[in-house]
View (tube, rainbow, N blue to C red):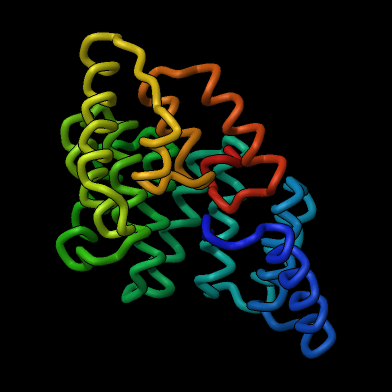
Length: 234
């Protein structure tokens, strides 16, 4: 999920680790889940889903398997099924922040904005320092039409990442200008660098300032490097 490491290097290390784990214990659900997740890096939806389902026959309440399976199903447009699986993951591990973060994302993907935001806002209260939660939240708010809230959350997120607050505020203003007045914004290279927007965020930010051509280019770049962002996949 990191923007700061070399994706090719990470890909090779991931492959080596998955193969070694399969040698050690090919039936362990966490190993099968990692194998399936690696398949998703190459958009093998059917293969990944098959492996996840096989893992669940061994451990039907494994939250990691349920978590990643909900992504796989959601990316294929099966929204109701994805929500059901994400809820199962929370039930299996109710104390897990990651499972609640995932449920919020799956709900938003399904268009269940009110409940998705309630789950995400609850995470903000209980784990305000969680950087993934902050990143997801500004996307949720943008998709739900809570643009001014999203602009504020984006500034907080960039601050946690160590980016420049002024740059984040300027981008937040671009969100509002496009949403409320239809004014298409332009992200300069300086703004992108100062706010530390990597491939995990860039395409979506460009979409929400109205830069359609830039969004397509950023998505193509993210897909070519197998970026870890679940939203790039979808």
